[in-house]
Amino acid sequence: MAKHKTPLLDQLESGPWPSFVSDIKQEAEARAKNEKGLDYQIPVDCPDDLLGVLEMSYTDGETHWKHGGIVGVFGYGGGVIGRYCDQPQMFPGVAHFHTVRVAQPNGKWYNTELLRNLVNIWDLRGSGLTNMHGATGDIVFLGTTTPQLEEIFWELTHDLEIDLGGSGSNLRTPATCLGMSRCEYACYDTQELCYNLTQEYQDELHRPAFPYKFKFKFDGCPNGCVAAIARSDLSFIGTWKDQIKVNQEVVAAYVGGEIAPNAGAHAGRDWGKFDIQKEVVDLCPSKCISYDGKLTIDDKECVRCMHCINTMPRALKIGDERGCSILCGAKAPILDGPQMGSLLVPFIEVNKDDDFQAIKDIIENVWDWWMEEGKNRERIGETMKRLGMAALIDAAGVPVDARQVQEPRHNPYIFWKAEDVEGGWDRDINEFRKRHQR
Ligand code: SF4
Image (cartoon, rainbow, N blue to C red; front, side, top):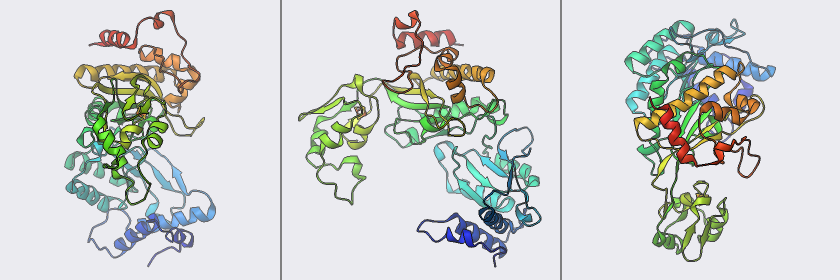
C-alpha cells in the first residue's frame, strides 16, 4: 500500500494520456513486493517518497528540491546533477535524488540488449525511473544516492562502453538526427560529424570551462528533426547549393491523383483532391514556384524550407551539391526571451577530413571569443546580442555574407567593409580554409 496520500497527483492520472504518476506508482509497487528479486542499493521506498514529496510541492506551491551541490564522478566535472530533498526526515527515500545524464547512442540507435543492460544498472542502483530522452538528447536516469555514482559510472563506461553526458557549464551531449542511416533528405552524414566532434571535444564535454552551457545539434536537412535551429548554440543544418531535382512526370501523377501527397501522411481524412496551386505553389514562402502544366522553381530564390519536397517527395528531390549551414546563438527563454540561431556560415561541405577540420577551426574561434568576452552564465546567443553579430563573425574568422541577417529582408546587422563587397562567398571560404589548414 502506498506510504503517502496523493489526492492532487491522483488527478493527473484521470486524463486520456499516459501519466508519469501511474508510472511512478507502478515502480513503487514493484519495489514494495520486490517483484524482480533485487538487492536494491538505494532505499526501496524511493519512488514512494518521490510521490510524497511531489504531492507536498503541489500543496505548498513550491519545490522541495534543493538544487545542485557538488556531486559527480572522479575526473569529470559534469554528467551528474545533484538533487537533495529539503524534507529528508519525512522523505528519507529521496534525501539524495541525483540525476545522471548518459550519452545516448548516435542517432538514438539502440539494440534491445543495450536497453536491457541500461535498465538493469538503473533498477539495482537507482530509482528505476528514467526519462528517454531529456531535452538535450541524453538518456536521463532520475534519482540515486551519492555512494552509487562511482558504481554506476564504472558499469556504464566499462561494461556497456557508454559515457556520461554533459551538464553544467560545458559542452552538452551532442545530438543528431538519424541522418543517412534512414533518411533520403540527409544532405551530409550527421552521425559521422556528431561522432567526430564528440570524440574531438571530450575535454569540453566532461570538464566545465565555459561561461555557460554550449550545445551542438546536427540536422541532416532543413526539416530539422532535432530542432537544431531552436535549441543549440551552434547548429549544423543540412542544405544544398544547386537545384531541386524535379521529375515532371511524377508531378503530373500527383496532380492527377495517382500518388497521395505528403507520402500519404494524411490518409484516413478526406482532404479532397490534391490542389498543387493551393498546397504547394501558394505555400512556397519565397514565391519561387509556378505551375502551368509544368512545375518551375526559381532556385536562386528558394530558401530550402522543404515544403514542396515534403508534399511531393517522389517528384522533387534535394540537390546534389550538398553540405550544411552553421547557425549560432539559439537558446531557451531564461534571460531575454528565446532566440533562434543566426546564420554564421551559409554553406560548408562535410565530406572529408579537411572539411571537418575547417568546421573545428570555426568552432574553436567561436569558443575562444566567447570564453574571452562572455559573462558568467551568459549563453553565446546573449554575448552575440550584447556585442553584435559583426563581432562574432570577425571572431569566427568567416567571410561576411549578405545572408548573415537577423531575419530575411529585415535589419541586416553587419557592418560592411569595402573589401567584403568585392568577390563572393566561395572565394572567401576557400581563402579561409587555406588560412586555417594545418
Ligand atoms: Fe519554395 Fe521551400 Fe520548395 Fe524552396 S523548398 S521552392 S522555398 S517551397
